[in-house]
Amino acid sequence: MYTARQPIFNRFNRVVAYELLFRDSSENRFPMHVAQDVATSRLLVNSFLTMDIDDITHRKAALVNFPYEMLLKYGNGMIPSDRLWLEILETVKPNDETFEIIRKLFHDGHKLALDDFIYTPEWDRFMPFVRMIKFDIQSDSMENIEKALRHIHKLRDDQKRKRIRVLAEKVETLEEYEKTRALGFDYFQGWYFAKPEIIESSDIENNTAMLVAISQEVMRPNFSYDKITRLFEQDPPLSHRLLRYLNAPAFGRQVDIKSIRQAVAYLGEIQLRRFVALLVTAELGSSTQPELTRVAMVRSRMCELIAQSYLTSEQAETAFLAGLLSTLDVLLNTSMSEVVKRIPLQHDLQRALTEREGTLGGCLAITEKLERGLFDEAEAIAEALGFDATNLSQAYQQAMTWELAQQHALAG
Image (cartoon, rainbow, N blue to C red; front, side, top):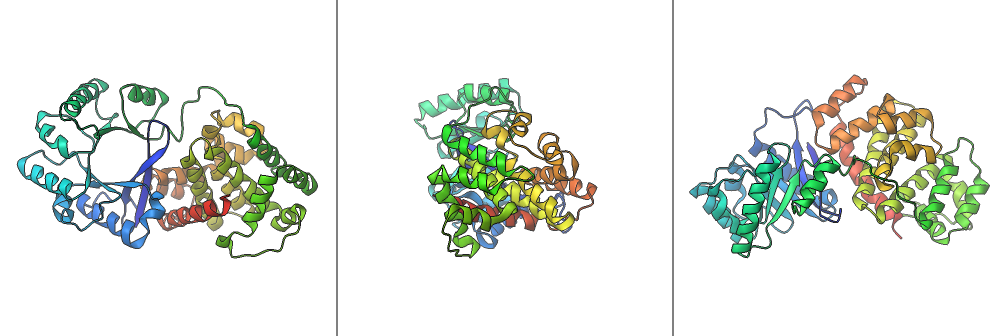
């Protein structure tokens, strides 16, 4: 059972919701044979019964595709309405029967969104019951979208339906993001946020500079424990987080630590590198885009899980770092080539981060495909590398669960 999530951002680049995506087949391939209503049913079962939906969405709203058959089936109070949004697919016809179903769902407390919307006058009477309208900017022209937006804004003003929000879907480039933002879109969905077009580099804040200094030292092949200890001792908040991390309940260990030197020695080379990389990512993301911190952590664990099955333990540790460092270009608003210049990384790790080349790059590419719900493409990459793609879904769920535990451990 596959459940993928894609974040939805507001105009302040903050995640406000996730779209949940279904993928499944007996051979773990894209389910071309699975009907949309069956896919939605399985997705709901997995999200609410098999897994905790709060773990998937971090207690944010969840959007799920609903074809016509599912509107009929689940429109009678069978699903929770507090955080679940029903995306009415573009295949649903705006006829009288649909109107009655949507009106009932609205009065029952459900939040309704029109997915991949292409405007026709038949939809006008539905607008009082719709809270969000999604436009696929790749499948319709900007000219048509602008016309539809003008009409929706007029309806919104005439009917005083200020709460109707519009979402630009499949925003892939900086130019598209700026265009849709200028058009007045409220929300944005797409992988511009993961792989943006870089404009300029940002300076690192002073309180993060110490972390970068520590990371530069700890990534060296033969780093100095004494030097790392001194760096930690110069920053009490970082020292505190190091000690909290050592005793986090998620790891089931209680250590009687008497000094920073002892803490550094206790972690050892591999775990210390992991901790510092986690901390750098979390610190940078906390002030810019916290979702990217979550993405990086899930990637790190997923890359490690893939590598643990097929590569050496040392390569698995490097795969972990590849995933964790993969969003630093966005967090620092610079290019990945500049990032790898700042931190001394081995050549294969550099290739993975900048080119997605080599086995490590393959692990990262697989993980990025899973993020987007492109499970068939992820499996194709895995098979090309000689990996067994059977357990990718289970591993990805484990990675998301691990990320939650890490966030709690690093808090404070």
